[in-house]
Image (tube, one colour):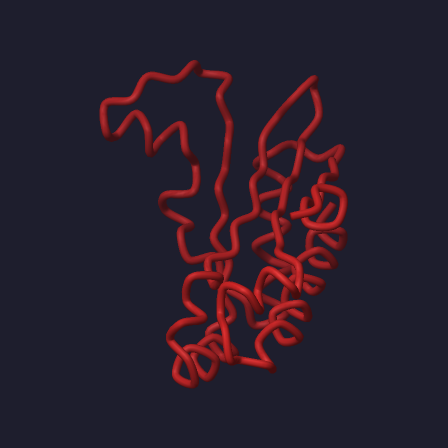
Length: 138
């Protein structure tokens, strides 16, 4: 893994709440969905299960999916599912909204899902699209 290539780090001048709302709108325009709208606010999730976090804690773990692509991909090869969850992390730090997204290199994809020559390229396209949607929502 190469941190500079695989970890997308950016920030927004929007609040966490506003970025999350705007990002959700953007992803829907490209036929993606946020699978966990009701549980992405980790403060609420942790507290609902007895966890203790400060009022200022505002991490949102947004799980993305493009059902019209994932359906074909996973039907073709269920081994691909290990790399399918796509999470965009959104949180506050130093008074700014931070966004993090982790993707994987083609070499790592090929190593993890062997004998599947088309998958690394297809997944790379999805990674690039998610990064562009983050930029569009900022």
